Image (cartoon, rainbow, N blue to C red):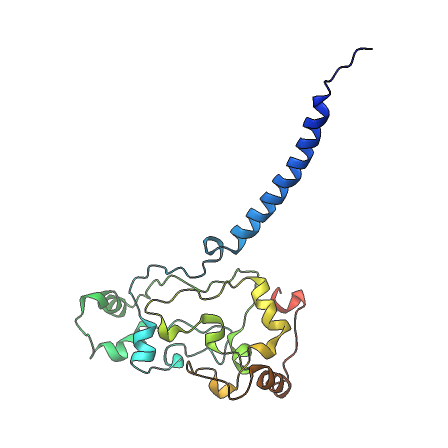
Length: 216
């Protein structure tokens, strides 16, 4: 019986199989890179806001504590966005007629909240509680970065699950004394491994990495 396929067909078949393996590997690598990119996570991207509010100016420049605006961070799941009345406590006297602050004055006059673009936005299926983390010595700056140096706030960390799990599995790398959680200039007096291990024990911190901890 005559041979149906040429001998070169065997080579072509092998090349196709090997090529398919490399193509699949490339697609997996591409997906991984895209998943961790700022395009997907939003990390490092500055969003346009109705008012260009500068954390740098208000915190480092003016010395305003985080809790003056984010009043519920220590007591509830949400840090809270301050109402316009909080802004107007100062801006009825300071820059009271500045054009750049007209959206703030309009919000106050019309009793309509400013439509801020949310920067640190976890998926709806993720449960996060600010007060629990602060009570365990996790600083604002651990998650949000040093906002005292940000003229315009951006997402400092990826907020992906692997990033959260690193802290949940190794809390001693991140915790600090509770009285220092709002201090942007905090420097540990001992190696972080030493002070972290002590605080984990003192604050009763558990290495919680089960799915139900965050996905409820």
